[in-house]
Length: 319
View 1 (cartoon, rainbow, N blue to C red):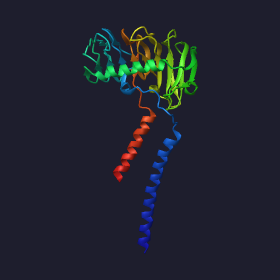
View 2 (view 1 turned 180 degrees about the horizontal axis):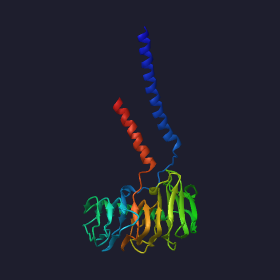
View 3 (view 1 turned 30 degrees about the vertical axis):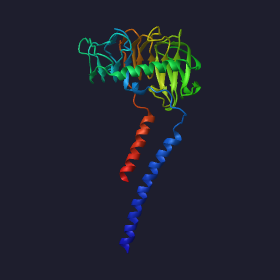
View 4 (view 1 turned 120 degrees about the horizontal axis):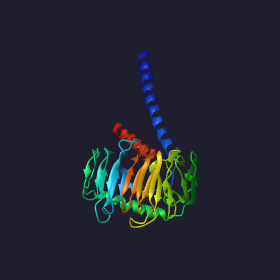
């Protein structure tokens, strides 16, 4: 009799332990859906372009040049795509032992003119049509977002000062983006622009004609928002021409952001972009003088999705 009672007690403890684990998992899943902010729409999508650190329009016989960085090695950490949306073939120059930690994909023929021992760690591929497809989609995204009315915002930050932009103060469009129209910008070295928002927020900063696009300070994030949810959209110009020049010279600062400038020249100096760099128009594109680009980690929402799929898969296997 004692053995039977003891066996029942052990069995009940095991059942309780299993039941308790089930409650913990269920509670965790419920918390994900209850406490994560919910929006009607997901905001802008980078699509396949999110797999790239850099996408260069490559229009005409122009150059994509990367020089060594004292601050970052590899200088580019992610894939690089070279388009050919108009006549001509862009040539890639990886100078002074520059390393690109990723694939180098050309929409057309491979054209390399590296000096020294510059190289990429992944494969070098020709005729990757998806590169042009990604660029066409990004160019359309830039034009669409640029045409939207946003909350007027003047950026004026002095040395050693910080200006915070709250996502919730932007104009919420029909796609779930908080849109700002930059009316003016003074963004000097030593200053910090902070974007504050949750992991479900998407912030668009639109730069039209006549607005300074020289980014000389740090760009930081708070509240859980990620670099692939913060888009600096420099949309002036058309057909890969006549846009505004994107220039950074930030005294080796970090900028957590995604840049999109389809119709303007891009020159990145002394800054590490933790995000993406897209555009480059019909002229040369340069990452030089301690510049660099690092693809951001997946957003918390993506990680949550992967975790939920894993739980569902585990449940199926147990059944």
